[in-house]
Length: 224
Image (cartoon, rainbow, N blue to C red; front, side, top):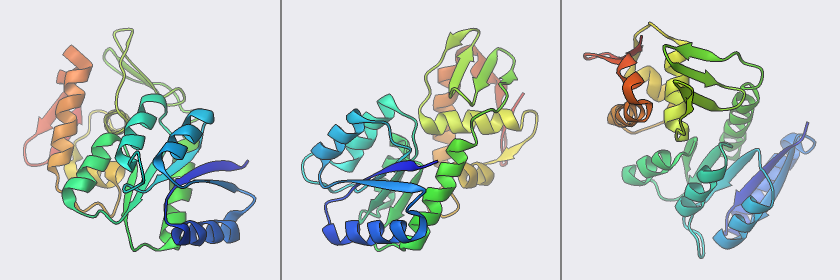
């Protein structure tokens, strides 16, 4: 199986570094498509489905944040930001828009490739998983589909990932630190408030069933 990855990056030197490294490591497994500006990136996103997208933030025309926002309206494919913008507020905003990872330049091509591989495997692993249920909530990982009392609920990627993890560990206390690690990644430098904020939004999205997500004081959360 060959994965199609879109790299939206205006720096030709970085394009070449990534293209050469990915070609050397997995030319048969990964086909890298390149867009040099935001408009071209948007056109390519609408032209075909990609298995993963790597976005710079500071792009000519449409920036990476806006591209991520538009992509998330249509797709749940993994998104990695690769950018020189390393301020905490930028990183938090990137995750809030629905990215799966945020890498600050300068970067290691080997680390980028490893994260791409991990995200592709995670996305592929969703196929064939049984439907998860809790009360009137049902989550189908194969279809990336959530229902509450028979009604479809549209969730942003991070809220979906939080709900899935809590449902997989139903009845058990899950610490905030664990949720940060599992959902935001091992190298996430932000604080635990981002978990609380997303849990609050998730409860609201689930309506009356949102009360099943219990806060465990000083620890984390439990779905019951």
